[in-house]
Each structure stands twice: as structure tokens, then as C-alpha cells.
Length: 64
Image (tube, rainbow, N blue to C red; front, side, top):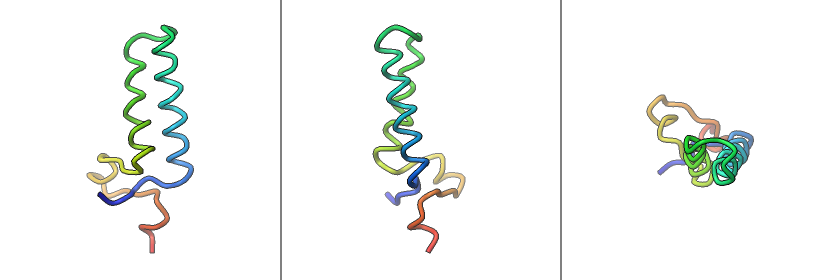
């Protein structure tokens, strides 16, 4: 697996994922909030399958 999620994108995904999961866990939003697991995992693993399919990358290492 090749990293395709870079710095700011990665931080934004992790923060968004944590916020959504926390809101779902506290009952503030419905069960749909657990969809936050997806951006959380893609941020942690620095790999987004959708980016791979579309040929995108925000990772500066791939631009060399």
C-alpha cells in the first residue's frame, strides 16, 4: 500500500473522524456518526482507497 494522504489532509481526517465518533458515542448524533471511523482510519494509515481509484494524492512524497 502506497501512502497517498499527506500532512494537512491527514490531520483533518483524524480530527473529523474523532469528532464524529465522539458525538455518536455520546448520543449527540445518531448512529450515522460512526461513519467517522472511515476518515479516522484513512488518516491513521495514510492511505485512501478512493484517492487510489481516482489517481489522486496529497502526499508530498509521491510528487517527486
